[in-house]
Image 1 (cartoon, helix red, strand yellow):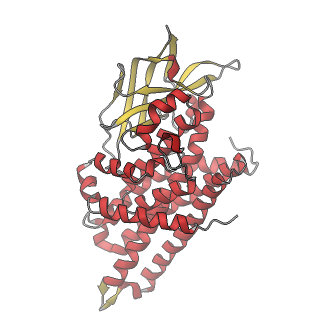
Image 2 (cartoon, one colour; image 1 turned 90 degrees about the horizontal axis):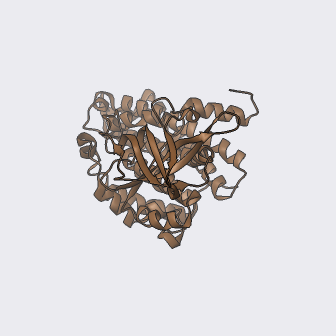
Length: 388
């Protein structure tokens, strides 16, 4: 199987790159400084078709492949990770659960606006005491007179409290299995439902232009028909959702690494010390060479995993490839931003240059949608090791 991007994918990458340079690059620093979520650009991304790349035409999508989505995420993230993660989460965590597990009625009700980029959706999984240990979910949902009554809280939820957020899907305990383990189900909660509150947005280290909130549910009632997929299958649903998301997060990281490489090459050619460009110095040139190796390796791993997804590879093979891609690319991105900042020297510490923003933004890549430790655990299990 070839992991080279097709000519069609490369042409698509150029079109997204042009969009990102025209609509995002000139404003990214200001959005970051003001912690501003640019709804107007989300709408433009929707008009370009980015939210519907993998969705069927009947709901307004283009019916494309997963690789195309990764290409778009990479190109947006090369300019601004906040917008890259907005796209990644909108599709992977907002649209895909409904597209994959929703009823025909749920799809018809919610997907057209989400795919058009007119609305956004969040995925409420993480809780104060339930992150990597998702089975420790404490949020509860009880059936009462044809309604689910939800009580609990979620945290670190992307696209969950913007002015165009239409819903969040939340995981909740809906009972107990015969073996005593919690029964986890997934339920759609529309924005504006009484008892559902998106709390004040976080003051984050990075991703300042991304919408992220804690959520609270107190006696929140939604119809029984808002159950997403089968009751008690929520655990498997979010595991499947995260498998795809790991590759997509890898694409965010890949965009970050490539941006660091491009910025460092340009700066090393222009910046002079002792009368010559710093790129002539082996200490600098070797570091930038390492960035090239990271970019090439991450690209191969991310698009190998995407190709396996598109080819319908066995789930075990895809899960392993997704974990490897996520682990390597995100850790490499953190290293790449540190190297790029070092290449820029004192200027790398100043907000005047984008490397500062990339440096702050990168760290969360090793944490979101499965920490590096979780990826290593998954890889070890895939190798047959009896890791806990």
